[in-house]
Length: 110
Image 1 (cartoon, helix red, strand yellow):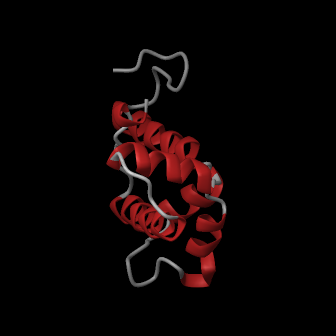
Image 2 (image 1 turned 135 degrees about the horizontal axis):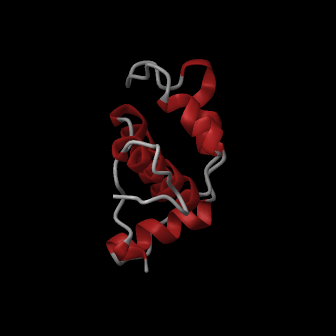
């Protein structure tokens, strides 16, 4: 459990702290706009309304394509063309938002 310091506080319950860490991790890993991601996650988002008002498209536009490419290539161990990186990124972000976050695999990215 986090004992304060970088990334947490003794006053923040473990689940919330872990959730915020997941958001921080994905925003850093993909170069995302954290406020846009947080807004989407804190809205009642479903697969049917995820791009209502173009919010999901706006979030995807903030992705650092090189960071996303590096992430997926290190996970899969192969070169991935840009159009597939875009598809994989969109799918991952949609799942992350709808599920309310999850821990990404980082050990593969080292």
